[in-house]
Length: 151
Image (tube, rainbow, N blue to C red):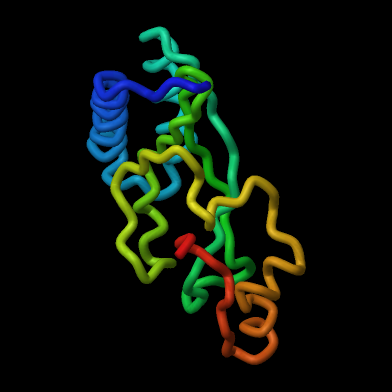
């Protein structure tokens, strides 16, 4: 049986993630395009504090296409911490994609699973059909049937 992640561990990780986010904003003025820098910094800090931390690459599948040009998704980097056999995903720059979503994205994402719109592989034809991208390219209109929010 897996044990749970303790509240004090989550609080400590959240403090480090908040520090990284603030550093990125103060250094660059924005989070957009800074996911590699943020995930590398958080990885270094958490590793030095004794956490088993990993950086991972995902593809963010957009919900709204109006501002897209060539693709409806983008490569992105974030972290997860392994505690007692459980993953805690941390993304300190998720809000850079707010323009592409109808619901408010958190400044810092913490969760036991990746959001549905974070894909571990580059989207293929089936996913692009499901979210309506191929219709958007052909007709300028689309029906989006992808379950972004897990509802």
